[in-house]
Length: 250
Image (cartoon, rainbow, N blue to C red; front, side, top):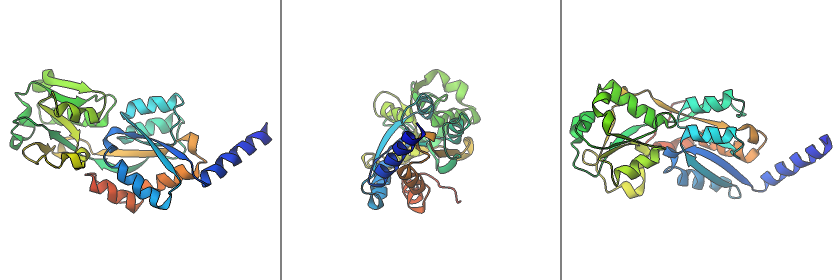
């Protein structure tokens, strides 16, 4: 059995060297950066296919712990990356790949010059589920630190992931708390700061350190390691900065 296992492993590694697929499970807020990340990575690795599953970080952790075929996990905060590590499902220790920023967005007549106080009399405020989405957790923290949560709680409508808050704000909701990265999508270029959106004061919420790990499943996968290294490289950092993230100096 040991001999067969060695042959199987050798075959897998040899296949990877000639082009395989890397399954990346990533926080929904990274949606807009991924096309450029993949395009830039494939310049040096043209035969490697990057397959991306996007979702709420808490839900993705659960899927990986239940044998979902993830090779790299890019969480929306360090807590979920640590949770995967502490439960024995990662091959690397969690490290920060980017820091997310929070914004409010609306197509309604909202006076963003008032900051968070602009939410006081709104009927519907879209926020990602704070139990599974770190941006939702940051949104609630900001409202509480601004002493507004109790006043607006009745108006909050929760979504399952951060990308859905933008969809809600573009349709039914008066305003949505969104990942600032969404504002860098080309389709959002027609919207203006101060009119359609405002960045939430970062002093009102804990910095959103987003963590990355290689999963235990992929600890011997050279292509997964290559993509992981790329995300943490200067090229990867420059792309995240382009899409509204901060990237801490290493």
